[in-house]
Amino acid sequence: MEIKKITTHQLQEMKRRGQKIAMLTAYDFSMAKIIDAAGVDVILVGDSASNVMAGNETTLPITLDQMIYHATSVVKAVRRALVVVDIPFGHYQGSSGEALRSAIRIMKESGGHAVKLEGGSEVKDSVLRILSAGVPVMGHLGLTPQSIYKFGTYSVRAREQAEAEKLYEDALMLEECGCFGLVLEKIPADLARKVASSVKIPVIGIGAGQGVDGQVLVMQDMLGITNEFKPRFLRRYADLHSVITGAVRNYITDVRSGEFPAEDEQY
Ligand code: KIV
Image 1: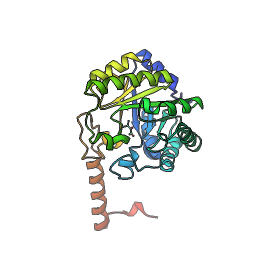
Image 2: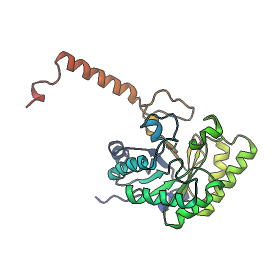
Image 3: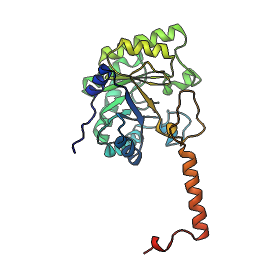
Image 4: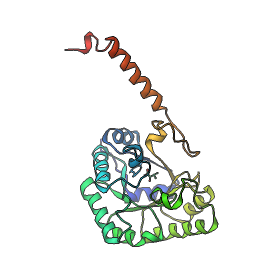
């Protein structure tokens, strides 16, 4: 059966129809295959790979080559979802030319369908330059983890009026530039609702409440593989940490006792 692929245009139609968009992160072939077949609309190859795959404290160390490696594995698995790839820290802030070169490398080498980058007016030139090459861009405002050393904490952003006003203006600007969608991370729900109702492009929230057009979570968090990260916005849909620990303990016991392999598990 032919599978109808999700496009940026379809996501905008989903918003128009009031149909919520489900987005999750993935970084490897096996997991991407499962979540794509389960029906997720957008797969984000997030730079959160730096945390959950590489074990770094922040998203800053991950390189463009590493992001392309993760994205290439994900793209091979995906039949239906739109694959969005984060441009990592240091690969778009320097100049719009550098941003364009990074986006082109991601699109050419990984086969991803779109890129995402963090920030508002500061990255406008980069956004416009990438879009001018025909590469779809998703914006990301609010808690932008690549700026963690400027913020100092991972707490809720845009509680103060000045920051909320800037975020609102940045969202309008990103839509005006031609971004196909926007992620809002960890901001007050009222502000996220106001942004989502002011723009025609889909707004995907993470810790941004109910009034947006879709939700995104980091897969390792929602599956309960990571078990120490417990922000209020995170709903765990499974406890894979316990499931995996139990399975591995059973395996160790069976190997040590000689219970595994059995007669019918050998040649
Ligand atoms: O890198 C990431 O996983 C993200 C999401 C948290 C939106 O940017």
